[in-house]
Image (cartoon, rainbow, N blue to C red; front, side, top):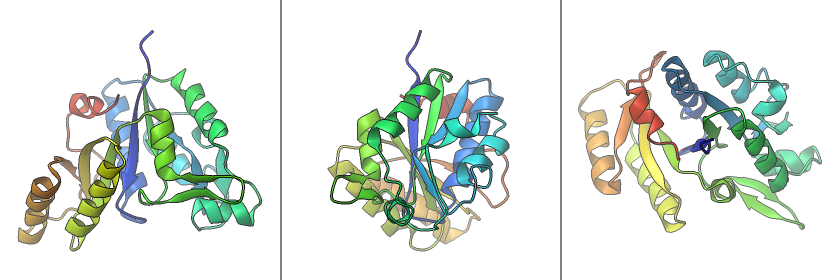
Length: 224
């Protein structure tokens, strides 16, 4: 049996549409016949899995995963996972996150793991252990795709994210820009991002899009 191929979806920050784009990615894969699933290590700011990012992707992409397979840690407080875990006294354990990933890997040929916020996100920060979002990527040996906004300021956000990840030897497959509406500035953003990072902008997502403008086979090639 072939090893499950994985892809980590990160972003330049919170509220750039990472979950929305992740849903488009998984849906595109599944519609093309790829056995693709979803997983997220921790979610904060949701009362239930169904109302969370994971629940959205599960429904939108028509995966049909059980709620307990989507995410091992769910917090109600809408703050960074490390703080939500402190408030609710439920610290995140790397072993639990890895076990959840492995369990999903037994059911899917392609597994899409979504991060929390931007790449610099504390997952656990206490006297016993310190875990950063990037530790998930390293522990699971995943390549990443970066989601960013197409508008003003994105060159700075993308370049900083890419430089941070490159400095930590976190492989980046591509960039997807959300909230694309065209025009000279956004077109220049694409050109400058590609030239300054040497990473391709693989797809552009317009508001309300229900289909990702990239071939499913090209998308599948990002998974390793």
